[in-house]
Image 1 (cartoon, helix red, strand yellow):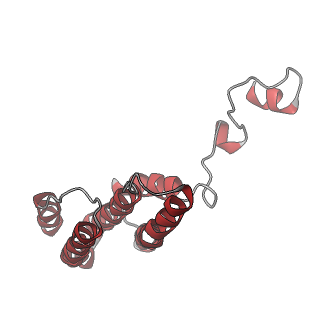
Image 2 (image 1 turned 45 degrees about the horizontal axis):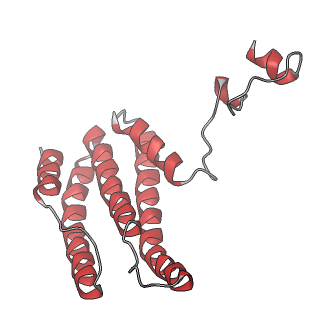
Length: 168
């Protein structure tokens, strides 16, 4: 029941799009961060209760945070900005969104560790794995082909090569 209450809280709040000018952007970010505190507290109550709902709660919390990071990255610089100003603007946005993504990855990593240590099966675990892989492709590369031995690059391996023999 606590998980469902947290989901209702999450779905009950709609925000205005993050955009410039700076005072509106600042207010929008502050509003989201205040809501995140409430949302985190609500989902963590589900985690305290344990079981698969606790893992699902961590998934949802991490997803909300990752979505916020994506929303921050979608903010467009003013049209009047020169290229070097646009680069500086993007770096400023990454200073906010990067730590949020790291926070989401940490939450999901904790969820998988918790599930393993307590032998919890949850439908959220594959979703968590997919999210971690999408946010960290260099650290967690997706296996391609049969158990990761094949790399699918859009062309057939040369006949007689070791890759071809593995594929056949």
